[in-house]
Image 1 (spheres, helix red, strand yellow):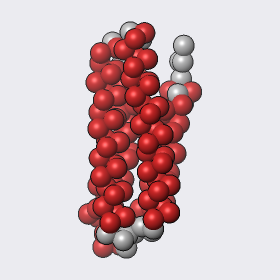
Image 2 (cartoon, rainbow, N blue to C red; image 1 turned 180 degrees about the horizontal axis):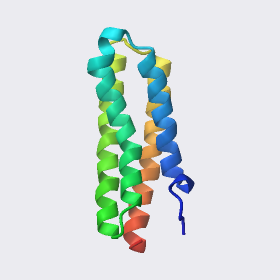
Image 3 (tube, rainbow, N blue to C red; image 1 turned 30 degrees about the vertical axis):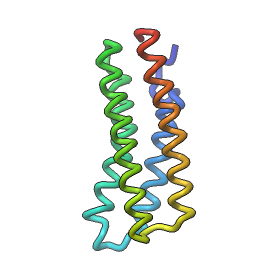
Image 4 (cartoon, helix red, strand yellow; image 1 turned 90 degrees about the vertical axis):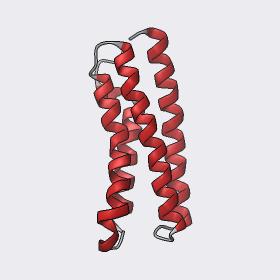
Length: 121
């Protein structure tokens, strides 16, 4: 049984996403940081924040609620990275790399949600 949040692979991946998102954010033109950049960063950071909050909850149904919120934030992050790419604010390579990380984290998160519900942990 995992007793420390930092031992969760899905949480570690969410932190990596946040670091990658910050790298993208810092390269945006100043005028766009407040609008699309801010939304993007909040969505990505919310993935890990919801995993952390769920991890700290006692009842498995309460935990899963936050893990579902993390999954919603992951999909919102996909929306923002897609717009950043379509508006030519990031390169195709940056988009592909970030989407790959999002997809990997999504798979880990879905497995984690399933395991949490199965074990009633």
